[in-house]
Image (cartoon, rainbow, N blue to C red; front, side, top):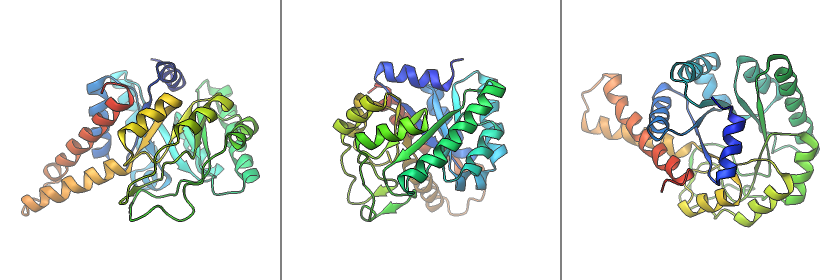
Length: 288
């Protein structure tokens, strides 16, 4: 099986993107994996600090790594939006394929310092173990939290300049870069701004490394396709599958108010997540 780095490189060469979807329970994992396997596409499973605290860090790693080994399938695990070196180190030590140090709220030099610390540790572990651990970092602010908002949060949407992007990537030696190019975390009732595809192209040119789009939930299809054509290699989706989960459970309980069997209550949520992920994976991979 190819490594995650090789799959990302291949996606860039083909002008497509790999889907990244977050989980905090087995139902979400089943829905995501069902969709990926149906389409025979690689997939990245993400867990934020809050999600891994709920689901269990070692437990998530054990389940995902077992699926990969059992089925010989390219399903990878990422520590999404970790805010400190200590939390990143913990995920690397457990066995994660990829980590994201999110220090975008810090001043530039402090962001560089903690990011470089994470990169250096990942390289050290790679040298000792042979594991190919990828490190991603962010620059610019796209808000935080996977919730439904009335409007774009104050202060969010500060775009990353190509000059700062190059300076940051050169200073940190990260493997993947998440710039702010127009997306916002969460779902916005008033609609999200368009992705600045021209900016994506410029940042890709000056950094020369794979780019990642965060805050993908709720974007227009053309924003995704334009961003991917411009140089995005991974797209993050979280809020959309959380909303699908909630709506499916609410609908089932409304129609079956006396039901108390978890397997029956939660199966519609698995199916709903699978449908969302399948549609997104088809879009990201050029199948539609």
